[in-house]
Structures are given as structure tokens and as C-alpha cells.
Image (cartoon, rainbow, N blue to C red; front, side, top):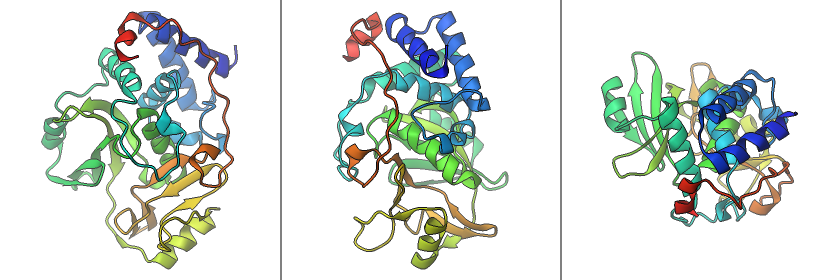
Length: 285
């Protein structure tokens, strides 16, 4: 059985039978193979597969789980259509939370947990950020604000890790914040730096093979290839540190034709039958 069929098989079993002991064991085996590079996760371009392994087996397993859920409107609409579709990704959140609790990757009271590890705190538009300056690491609670569904947020992490490995996002678990919103808990290297100029940003991205994506009033914040979209490279997200330019945060997406950003990326859609959901899932359909 090749990897594509292995993934279809475990997704179908989870959809129909839930997280049995056998299903969890098989899921962990495939996640480990993807992390080690001995199996290919067909959703992510082959050139960016390393972003999954850099993000941990937790990222790999959660990506596999989300792979086995029905597509959503958020995944097929224009890239700058940011209206919130509340609850659209609840199946993905439910399944990943269920697995994370069973596997020890769920973090209760994440604000308190990270507050005990770190001393400084800040926030971005979609993240709560905790700084541990002494150990030169940052912890983030990344919400689904810009993506609506977990699957797109996990894509973002894998792509970021592949394109910007010096600031990789290591997924350490999942949680719900004080407001009850689903969050991805990550660790990232702490970068000290200054905002880069527009010229530096343009040269940096062009040297990596990206071209301007436009749609940003001439500010040169958004870039694309035929496979990928990298956006929101504003003065807070791209810095010049002691070892060069560093992107600490970006809007990273698969540039599929449906998002209307001039992309042509296609991946083989999973072959799954959603007609017989596990009893627990019926509450979310």
C-alpha cells in the first residue's frame, strides 16, 4: 500500500470508527514516516515537505487528521475574502482535540501554562506571544482568525517552516484559550532585529524565486510562485537580525487556482466516503 492509500485508509477508519487504539497507532506510524521523510504528504508540494518534519510529529499527525475532513468554503474562496465563517471547521477542531487529549498533546489553560514558562507577553492580530528571553525562545498561541479552519492554519505552519527554516514553528500541542477558541501552541526561536526596508524585502523574496503578488497598494508585502502564496510581510513580521533577514510571521498558503492569486498548484484530493460518520461526528454535521 503506497502512502496515498495508507492516508486514505487511516482517514476512513478515523471517520467511521473514531480513535481506536489501532487507529491511533497507525496514525502515529504514518506521522513518523512523514516526519522522517520516508512518506510523502500529498497535500504539500514536494519541495516543501521538509516543513512538516520541522514542525514535529504533532504537526504531521494533526495534518493527517484534517486531511480526512470534508472541504470547506474557506479553502476555495478568494485569498482576501477574510470574512469569518464561524464554526466552519468544527469537525477538524473536534477530531484534533479528541486525538490530542488521547495522545497527551492537549494543553489545559494555555495562558497559565505559558505564563509560568515566560515573563514577557505581547500579541499580534491572530496570536498571543510569550517571550523567554533567557532561553531565546518564543511561544505562541496561534488562533484560526485568518484561516477559519485548522487545515489551512497547519498548511501555513508547514510552508513557513520550509521557506523560513531559521524561524521554524515547532508545534508542541493544541488548546482552547480563555475565550474557548481553538489555538495551535508553537515554539519559535527568539529573534532580535530591526524592520527591513521595502527594497530589502523585495530583493529577499525575489532571490528565493517569488514574484510580487500585488493587491497591497504598492507596499510589496505579498509574493507568490505558481505553488505558494506568502503575504503580510510587514515591518513587524520581517526583521534584520544579527544573522541576516528573518521572517517571524507570514500568511502562507497553497496557491491553488480557487484563491485567484495566479497560482496553478494542484494536489490529489483524498478518496474518502463521508456517508458513514462515527456517532460522535454526527453532532458536527
